[in-house]
Amino acid sequence: MSEKKLSFKEMCEKFEVTPRTLRYYEYIELLQPERDGRARWYGPREVARMTLIMRGRRFGFSLEEMRQWLEMREQAGSEAQLKIWVEMADRQMAELTEQRRQIDEAMDELRQLRETAASELSQS
Image 1 (cartoon, rainbow, N blue to C red):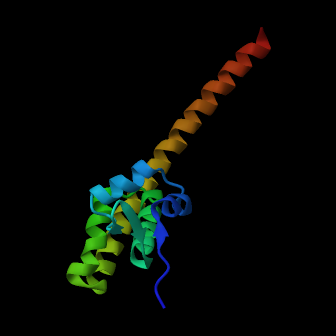
Image 2: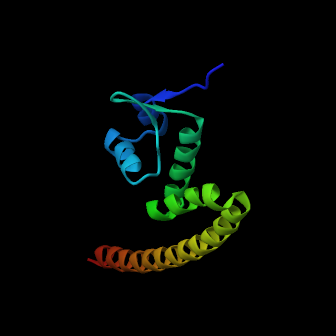
């Protein structure tokens, strides 16, 4: 029994990405679909990689970080990949924590300015 493969269009629909995005991921070697003439076919490996790429993007990782991490498994095995993942996750969580602190600070300042403006309006 052959593995289910997705067409280019199906892959775009499944991951809600544009054709340009999918082509770019191929260009930077994140994905390597099978080719049949001009048609591209994405097997389970590519679908799994795309799932990880989309998750990584959601967490704020760069495409280059994701490319290197995905290649790590093929070059050094899953244990090395997991070790790098833990390091990447720790670093990203620290960055997201700092971003949250900055957002909270900006929201507090905005809230204060809004309350001052609202107070001035009610006095006039």
